[in-house]
Length: 485
Length: 143
Image (cartoon, rainbow over all chains, first blue to last red; front, side, top):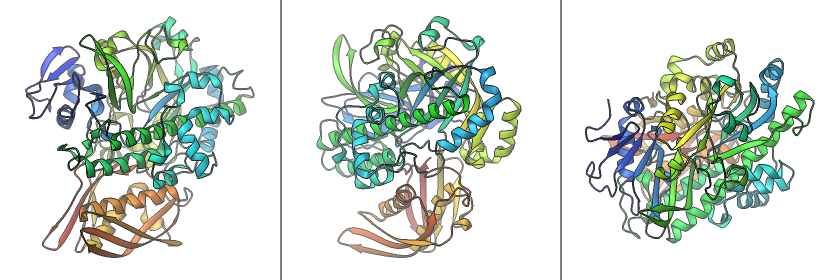
């Protein structure tokens, strides 16, 4: 067991490492997990949560969500809010895949209606939405057009006919973070990115056809408010980010921060991946503006992919996407930094919230969520492994405890190499087919790496978030079709 | 083997150690290790075109970092899969430089057995060391 002896149990789902755990910690670290999930966490999670607690300007606690596992600088599942005036911004708190996130779309189809067409549907989606290594997107644009896309985000896509106006309202930030400045982005990043608009990526990125079985609806009214209205309703969920563009932005600024943080700002961190700069420094502000470009590119990427999904469904079922009820439910980011206002010790404060493998979970009434969800709290989409399924949850009032953040996924427990030793891609595909899940993959080795046993239980993770009072389960979706890069 | 993957270092991603009897050998091993994460069989990469890859950095360690990043850049910007050869190293006024001939071709899913995409080289446990003429690099890649 890797859990440090110094850990203090605050409640069934909150565990604290005091500031005395490691020299230099400015605040305690708090791990949100059941005892079972806590014991499954690798020891690096605790060290990383402690390292994050040392960052200047950090407020309240360095958090780790129930799906926590080790990452670069921050643990995956890491949340940290810094004072916007005096604190730092750290690219490691956002990750290389800036605005990696999830989008969920409803249909008015049922499992029975889709099953006879499932193979054709999945095969066609695989054909129409590029995935895998490298990959050129189906949106052909020039570098200059791409520069516009990264400043304008998903609204650019809708203005070009890729999607519906309502999609923007149902996307975090309306699909565009204001203040994106493409002049803060390197030419290398533009060159890596402009061919990739409309690509899924690979690894743990995917597109899934899922069923909402009646026995998996936790709150019928809330599910209906989110667009889940009939038994065995079919939804589509997909997971991808900012592709090479965002990865390059992250890499570029990690280098810039490493160069200036000690000599210019007197900052010293043990882990180079925790490189940081004062939020209000030129470098900090430049990174934030460049990060927003990557955020917008990911929203645009998911927007055009949604458009393609609608086209494919229309083709296969012979009806328009409107007739098929293909309304977007929501789109969430889980690798991002946001300037938000939160109450701390009775005072409203501007903070820079880092969510690294963590989803925003605004509760009912909170500013910043669309009008349609103001009463319910925002939808939260948490993806599981390709074998187990995923969840739709809602943000709750209690999430204020974690700067309105919750988990984002399952979290890996087995290394990619080990998964490849244990599983054979083709066998796995056959096994899943026998269990009613058809996967079309670009790589069998990649498929083996994504075996369900390589991940924590998504049921454990989402239950833990509900027990902790930071989000609540609305519906569980079971996969029947999957496109993997 | 000039390179091998490390099971216990990275759960969600891939880590490797590359070795060589010279700086050049180690760089080539590291480049192959990177490419081998994305392409199951490096022998399927035919020499159809070449690129001159030139990078610089303030330390020799960061030179390898920049070099591997450049190969990732070519994979995305030009959809190229590259093997490297003929490296030239230079140190001048506190800066390290390397130029290499990189040979390869455009990515083709029909020809190249593709595995998983590499997003970036990370700084996690990144190290380059030399011991009695044996060069060694440890790299963790974000997948």
